[in-house]
Each structure stands twice: as structure tokens, then as C-alpha cells.
Image (cartoon, rainbow, N blue to C red):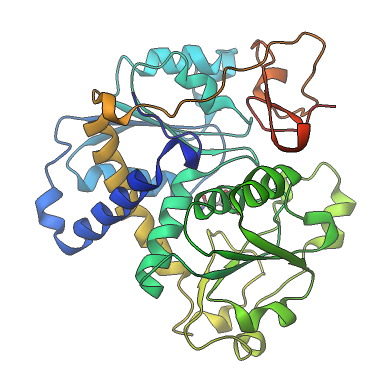
Length: 359
Ligand code: NCD
């Protein structure tokens, strides 16, 4: 069965297929209206969300299906201490497909170990957000006409921004992608993305802390919010929160065809004076999110019993009781799961669930 936990669970061909299907849905909406009739999507949201949850809901409704679930775990058995795996076993008796958002990294991955229906990761902690990635890829394709060959700048919170991590992973499989990482020192991209993704896949990247310096060369500017809820230290948050703001003056330095993306919500990193600029694509991006989720639901339901579309093969995980994952937000430190590890680039060992470096 196919689940979507990490963008690399989909092959490049499968991603292109989903993006193409989303474009077909946009062109012929009426053809898809009843395609999920009598099917149910469960949305299990253990963390706040407006766009992602409503976008899944709207997607399933537009396909003629139904939606059940919770948006506040306090109203479910989770508040009684139920594990993620038990919740998923139960919900799999009611629903045909599950979208899950969780503050704990690796939670959707452990859900796949017991689920009898496809699981979609709708965001796990600072780790991954593959459906935002599909949204971003469709948006780039529609705004610029192509994905190969782009120079993309990621600006803001590259450390905790899961949408950035997932999009870089997905882009690493396209041709001639150049990445410019624009962030203050405190919010730089985690090493595992630089080493295991960029270095390994040959993605050219450079780091800078000046948006003014980087903006003229970009085809896509991907803005992000500083993730206040993931900071352990309030003072550190206050120091960086206004670091990089996009305004009309900076837009004047950019290419005429650049596209500005933002997964939203924005706080103050894009001034509203930019909204009417034709290059501001972030509200179009929201709508693309619904279409790409329609395409994803249709594809995963179709692929459910198709051996051609299984999960990718990975090396077996390493069992070693002497190793520990030190990430307090990892599932193996929050529920009873045997700590597992994998060998990564440069002789580094990483947690199987959350990708943190193991010391
Ligand atoms: C993002 C998220 O939740 O990771 N939003 C979204 O899914 N559209 C980005 C964010 O919260 O800043």
C-alpha cells in the first residue's frame, strides 16, 4: 500500500503524475465530481491548522466523498492517553484514507506500521510536510511553466520550517535546481538536508543572510514564517522574529517573472503592499493546494491495491540499544517505540523516525 509520509515516498514519475492529474482536474472539474462517492477521508489533526485541514476537507467534498475526524485532540480519546497506532487502527475501521497532522516527529510514520488504509502526513513537527510540497510544485509549474532549471530562494525560518525541508527534498530530483538559503544564523537549514539531500543529490546551494543580495537572481522566492511554537527559548524567538521582510522596495529588485510563494499563515514577513503585485502567487498557491490534494486522494485510492505503486525500498533499520535519539519531539521519546537508526551521509547515524543526528 502507498502512504505519503515523506516526499521521497513518491517517485519523481508519481509526483509528475499527481501534478498532471491536478492540472487535468483544474481544466475539467466536472469529470471528477463523483469519483470518491461513498468514500470517507479521516482528518486527524493533533496540531492547529486552517488551510491544510480545510483544503483536505474541500478536496474530498469536491470529489463527492465524506469527511470525519477531529481538529482538537482534546475532544478525542487521545486525551485519555491513546497511542497514535491505536487511534489509527480504530479510525481505519471507519475511513478509507487518513490525513494526519501531529506535533511529534515520526508520528505518521509509526501510524503506517499498523494502518490498513493509506496515511497522508499533513505535517509532523518540524520534520516534513509532503502535501504542501505537492502544492508548491504545482504552483511553480503553473506560475513559471516548468520546474527544471529554476533558482529558488528560501527565506526566513529554514531550521524549523517543515515545508522547506520537504520541498528541497522533492526538488533535488529535478534537473539543474539552484537553491539560495536566506536566513539568520539561528535559523539555518538543518545539516541533514544539506548533507543527505543537497550534497548527495548534487543540488547547488549557497547560504546568505541578505535578501537584498539574493533576490535579483531568483525565479522563485519561498517566504516562511518564523515558527514561534517550535522555539524552546522565547528570547531567541524575539531576536529573530522580524529578520526578513518582503516589501515593495525589495520586489523592485526582483526579476519581472519571479513567483513569490508562502505556505501561509504569514505573520509579518510579507507586507500587504506586495499582495497586488502579479508575482505574488501565495493565494493562488492555496487554491492549488485543494486541487493537488484531490489528485493525491484519487491516486492513493487507485494505487491502494496496486503492487506497482508500493512504498520505496529502504535499507533495514539499525537496532542498537547503545544509541539514543536526543530529539525530545521524536515519537520514540514520546510513545513506546523501539529506537531505530539509519546510516546517513558522511558516516553519520540518524534517527529512523525524525532524522536527528545521533551522538
Ligand atoms: C505551514 C505548516 O503548517 O507547516 N502551513 C501550512 O501547512 N500551510 C507553514 C507554517 O505553519 O508556517
